[in-house]
Image (cartoon, rainbow, N blue to C red; front, side, top):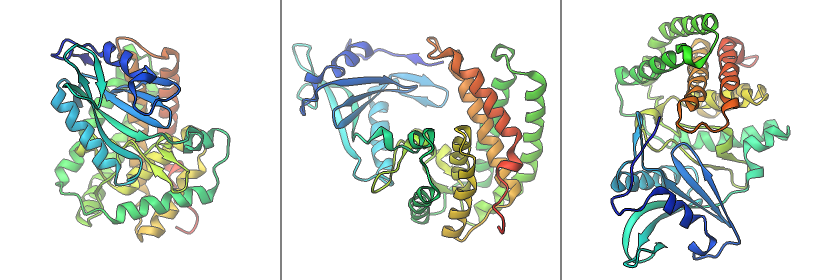
Length: 348
């Protein structure tokens, strides 16, 4: 559950939202502004631009309570996302308060917050949107793999110990198990118990494999949140919204990353994408992963996504409350199918 903190200037978050929702706030004079609330930010769609304002919140995994911390996250978001979309992220913008108390975007006065300014990309070209209308072809996934493979090849091996790598899975799954097992979440306790036991057995098998992947230099600082809504099948392909607030969660195996993307595609009914991603990345990187490790990655991500769906029900103000339990159950079903879903394509 987030905790909100007011700005020392006396301004409240609602004042900033009100200002940034007004087209007159922007120097390029958009015809209108659409404000969208996310878990950690407010996003303002202003004509051909997007502005992102971090909420002054604290979660177990991030702390945006102070102006300085929000500034640092804005800088990190731009730096990290320019690795895959250098022309989309224009830079930082300031929200300032003049002496008369009025607000100005990138103007003179006291800085009261920091924003990311981005190019607005066509929503109907996201992988998510195109999957929803069954308009994603194998060659589209091939283009995505080309971009990702080039990205992964450019990255040095992660500077992380084996204990730290394995500890990331242990810590995250401990929280996952607690949430899925919480009676307040109203999950099928027998089914949850069975899938958690399957995960534990899979993890025991995967531990030495994870150490081997690290020793081989295969763990890198990747994107961290590779979902279909973050991939735009434009020309060139753009991949945005990496997980900027935690380097620890970005330290991963490229095959874990594409397994997450394959899982999200399967959640939308495009189960064939996982095999195409694996085959393409394996060829591009001249690398392969044992089937048992791929199944572990799938289980881990599916159960994590089930947990994150249920966490919405703990919010002070639950958006779309009818959505989260069915979504969590669907991810649990996908976790139960790990071996089948991650079976290497024929001949691999």
